Image 1 (spheres, helix red, strand yellow):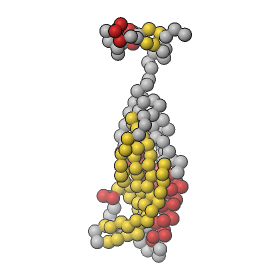
Image 2 (cartoon, helix red, strand yellow):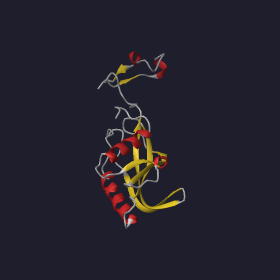
Image 3 (tube, rainbow, N blue to C red):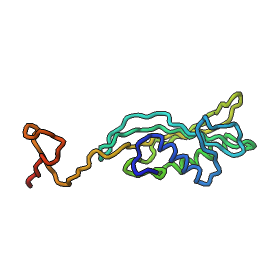
Image 4 (tube, rainbow, N blue to C red):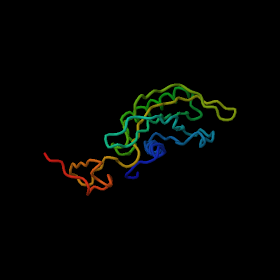
Length: 174
């Protein structure tokens, strides 16, 4: 993953990569990727919402993303609804304390994890499914509070011609 996270879609791809490598034998993609073939279980991912949040301590803008992972069990499972429930529970355990390989300074742990039964309709076919939803906060972009000099400085705006010029500031006396 890049050193600085600057797009919400990076969380989507980080989750997908983690789920593919989790050893659960899942196909992972978006609802548009679903082909109706259920030789193995699917996890259909979506970013449902991007709400505002409190800035990080570094000044990055917060994006509180609502993520949904809809689990559709493989065909041939006698109790596909229960199999989907069991897989959603395994995903909940995986997601509980997971930042998906993203830096902790830019990605909080998932919150408000909840699994609910659902139905996937693809064409005229209905599939028993379970959906795991949670919120996860990303803090995007560069930190705003980097002090290039490392020395606390001040200036009165009426005494400087350019407030963005660090050479016009004086060190604080302690």
